[in-house]
Length: 111
Length: 115
Image (cartoon, rainbow over all chains, first blue to last red):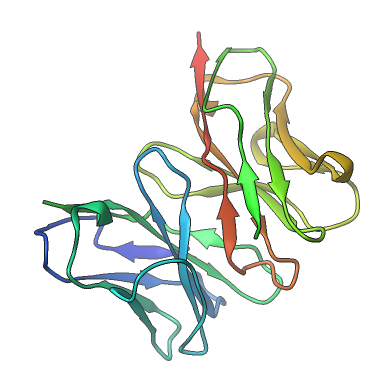
């Protein structure tokens, strides 16, 4: 079992650009959550996808959007990137009555 | 709204000494409680969790935590620290409606282990 896998590992983008991050959940998991972790802080919940729909959302602007595919994998899209969007983006997967398992994260740097 | 406070930003401990990390939460009912560990540049690894039942829970790597409802606390302990325990530790609270639902994290405690 490969666990939760995220791609890419690192990327650098310019202000104003758009970025797409990808996540494959752990085998048997159908729910994907995304978190943003700024340097020196705890992760903050962005949103969660279940059955290809956004089920919960944290306090993030509409520039942050997502998608879940029929195979349960997910994408996080961020439009009009700001310097403040630089962070480690973590994907977590879960199933009914299981805790969240996290991927290694994608380090996004906006310059 | 739920919240988690980890009062200690940094803790330095000698190898072989005991370790206790504090966590206080705010939640309307008994939540699900978690401790995660993060090595530099890495994702989060679950150390232990509390859902219900025995208030003293055992986790991986020799860690344990005690849920105290009256104090709204869920402190993490380890009797004897190893150099490999140097990392950042996060306490988190989740909704009891589903274990995988939205987690609210504390700000983390960075642990440094002295030889």
